[in-house]
Image (cartoon, rainbow, N blue to C red; front, side):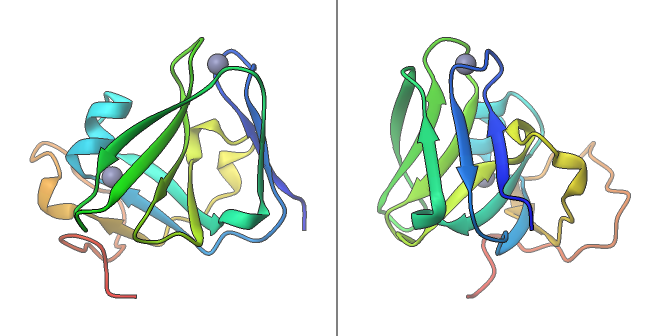
Length: 137
Ligand SMILES: [Zn+2]
Ligand SMILES: [Zn+2]
């Protein structure tokens, strides 16, 4: 398979993931809405150890997840694009912001998460399962 590659809007940050995505989810949580200024974000779950990020403008925002443990959003200090998130509660995983992939068209989203926060004016055109928060592992 081709490695997953992507970059921020300005191109100063680039990343590569050398393993297959574990899942692709459409997240409707308020944190994703705020950080993307959109109705949802599409996130690709991958093995954290298989991800390499390069570039000089990497900045991290630490927030608090539903688990009560920290979450870290990595973004570009120059252009503001969030490229990846990590959760202390799931240390083996990284969550790639799908819009930053070089080939997002190759994705196959499998589920909606945090559907409880979805915007009422959003109509989905798919029949994917809708989970109120995160599905049980
Ligand atoms: Zn950038
Ligand atoms: Zn979210």
